[in-house]
Length: 294
Image (cartoon, rainbow, N blue to C red; front, top):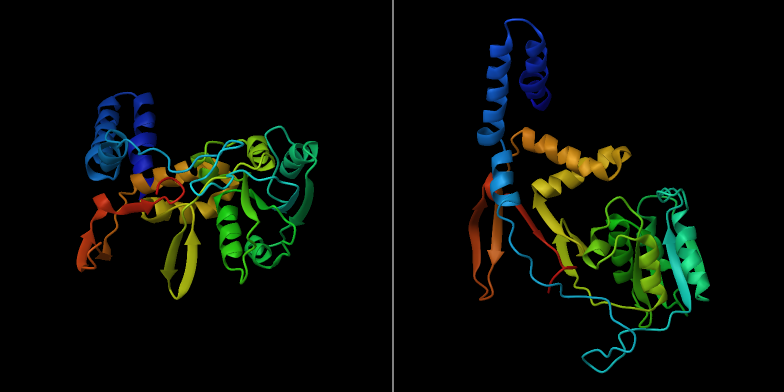
């Protein structure tokens, strides 16, 4: 459908404009395409609800602590970091300057005299397995270098441990195509992320417990259904496009007049359950972001 409309409203008008006595046909086709885009596709809703009417976000609930700052209970919110265990995908690509991501981080840590143990992943889900099983005795921080998927695996593996080390903090270095978690904490820089860890700066983070299909999953980023959720799933098949795959898939879905109907059961603060909630296609994108706000 999307390819057909592209041919009718873009390619054919260009061809007709180059031919004699067919400019009127080209104008009609272009007008038809503009009408469909503005009034019959999801693009209209995207403009009205997604661009022109963006609400003002509340202030961030978490921020990196500074040295010497005391927490609410009088405890230091920074810690001394001497030993790191780092989980890293050796096939995760290099920086724009062609440097290995692990080498960029190790240069920061070793400059500060920090001992680094690197664990390389070999298959999908391996980061979660390592985070759940690796020996963390004497480890000040368990760190993962990667994107949001890697962060998800690290947290779920760590939270699945039978005994969680009290003195081990989780650390993230933004080394993936999507780094929204670290962006929410103020950096997309790999070197800056490594520096934050080396300096022992910490930040509180909410975790959402999700029960689905009999599984219990921890979410530290977003819980999404609707257009944005479908984009994330579809984009996995286009990883070769890099970060632009999300925009490309979003454009395709919008041009194809994205629609979705969802039935929900909502439980209010008073414990009252509503089972007759239905979201139409204009409201069919919802998400929570525990890393942003409490």
